[in-house]
Image (cartoon, rainbow, N blue to C red; front, side, top):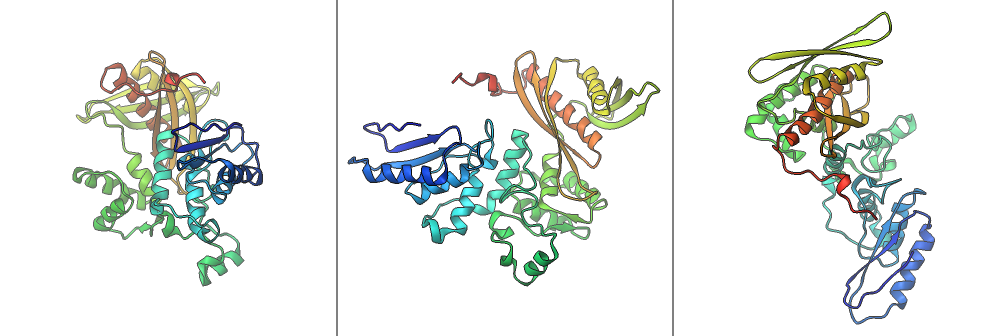
Length: 364
């Protein structure tokens, strides 16, 4: 680790790039620098921490306690290796323990969940259920003693209120169109008047299968709509068959807005492989599957399944992330792979701007 002071710099970043330092050590460094570096210009010190030992947030907070005026990190803590300090955890900690840290921020905390969901969706990296502040289990209590305490006084076991980070009252089977639209606005989701009818229809289909609809369900419902491709084909149906040699055969149907349908079949050693092979026959383009992840949107047997894939367009080496949503994980897999291939198809046809790929990043 090193520290350099430029003559005209106002902001000084102090990087802890390997996640080795402890909070006590890291805080002491900031304390020493602030007390001993003399200049006639104001210096704003900033920690930049990695989470290799799980101490990125603690180290960043220790820096703030000892005079740092800015923190560097990422939403959901994503980045290389074990990631960077999770900014949402730092922001909420500074709010909850303002008595200790004695600092204030202008961060709008009730957008925390929305922001976390958006980053997860675009990065293709699911948020762990047990993650602090934004994880799905943050406000869940299974222990009877905990449930009793929360019912009597939520602050007994919930130091963070759901409202603080943007968790809203869930919709239910009797919720109407007006309540649904208001929920979309509450969650700051992008939609037009033309989107409302098909989205509400999907919502009503969802409440027929689930007793309680959470904010995560609504975000997934909106985010899980098809990739914009009005002239192209979308997922229509899926059939699977197991042969005597244990190979799986998938028959994937696609349809366009004019009602035209096409079907492609292929085999594989597993269901997902067979589905992807059939879709590859339809698109007939050079695509490499980089990653495939399944994420349950909510808890319970009636959860929606969100499948995330990352693919590479072999012709351009561009990386694309896509998501698919359905109660059936195999149908969600077909949807997401079609969406990903649609991105590649559009790039090959010159219908989208040049995407930034990790291949474009400079070597360090």
